[in-house]
Every structure is written in C-alpha cells, then in structure tokens.
Amino acid sequence: MERSIREANDLMEISRKQLEVMRRQADEALEQAERMNELLGRVVKLTEPIERAQRGGEYVAEGLKRALFGEERAVLDARKEALDVEAEALDAEERSLGAEEAAVDAEESEAER
Image (cartoon, rainbow, N blue to C red; front, side, top):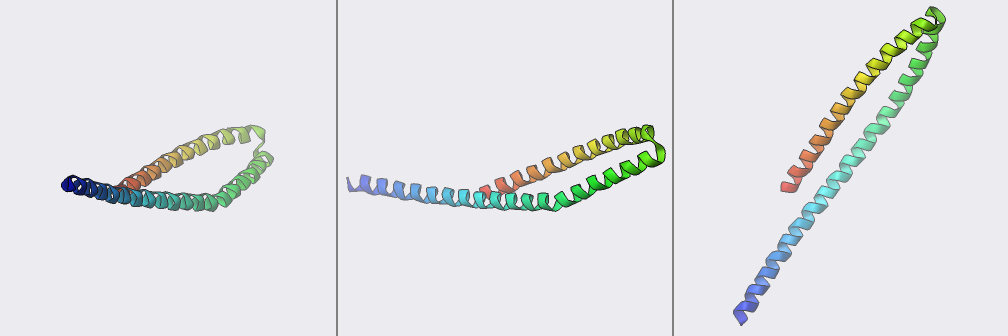
C-alpha cells in the first residue's frame, strides 16, 4: 500500500516537473513573440516616413511630367511606374514571407530547447 502511494506521489512529482518545463517554454515563446511583434512595429514606424516621402516625390514628379510632356506621356509613364511598384510590392511580400518563416523557425527552435 505504501509502495503504491509512493509511486503515485513520484508520478505526480514527475508530472509537476514536466508541467513546469512546459509552462516555462510557453512563457519563453510568448516573450519571443512579443519581442518579434515589437521589432515589426519598429520596422513599420521606420518605413512610414519613407513611404510618405516617396508618394510626395511621385506626386511632384507627375506634375512636372504633365507640365513638360503633356497628359499622354504622363499616362504612359504612370502605367510603367505602376508595374514597377507592383513588382516591388511582390518582392517585399516575398521578403516578408521569408521573415515570417524565419520567425516561425526561431520560435520552433526556441520551443525545442
């Protein structure tokens, strides 16, 4: 009888230790996710002024083109720029997906520790 109680207590202690390890791993993964989220927020804040400046420059350039070359030329150039921007957006999306995959890999690596 005492042996059964001792074995049950031992199993409960092992379970408690395993639960504690799992809780620590979950806490570490959460902390890492919060850090990644903070870093991504910083990246967004850093890129916003650049994007605004780019849009402003594009607006001024468009006005100059119209003044110098007329509407037709501006429309052709706008179409070309739209295609270029779309290509850049696709490249940025690919890089973003790569970063997300790296973040997931890092989290999985961290969780395995």
